Length: 218
Image (cartoon, rainbow, N blue to C red; front, side):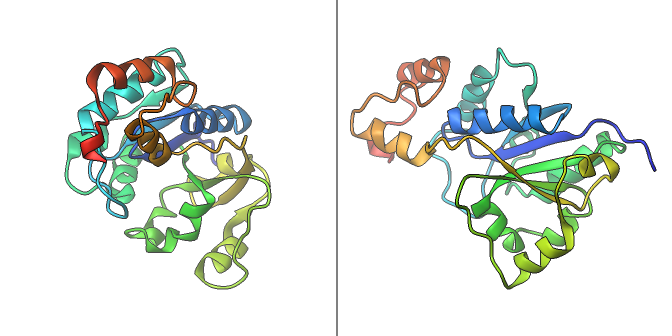
């Protein structure tokens, strides 16, 4: 069996703003799956959702503040530097080139898994990375269709499988259910509510100081 480096977790998103739901999921999976670290990669221009309210620079700054004291969570600005539409396949190709002997694990939620077949070059993604699906109690998986077939072919039951191959497996793993969303945080700001304890304190102070989410932007 080939010897590979310790897997790297990859958590992409708009992080508009980053919150404890993102951070706790990344940390729990880092620990549970024995990853080398988790890279949080803010996208520059999402292709399947509305454009972020905060600028790329603001989102990057908030993310860096959020993980400043946790060395196992790292910020990667490759998509922001690349500009243009942020496609996961392009990011994976860059990471694979720089880490050819390291399994890459894309961290996603159930909703992202259910829409995975709509991702740009999704079949090629599975030749470059594993999928780690963070789930909560009472989640429902499809019984028919592309994703159901994909799970039948690629679902594994133990994280050791992420270390035995560079790519191609799907692992489901439970995480603490923190019902926090960036959309709701922005709505609360627009309504003049206090968002403290939904985001790290240094992110909270950054938002207050810079007026990142003003009402007329929402």
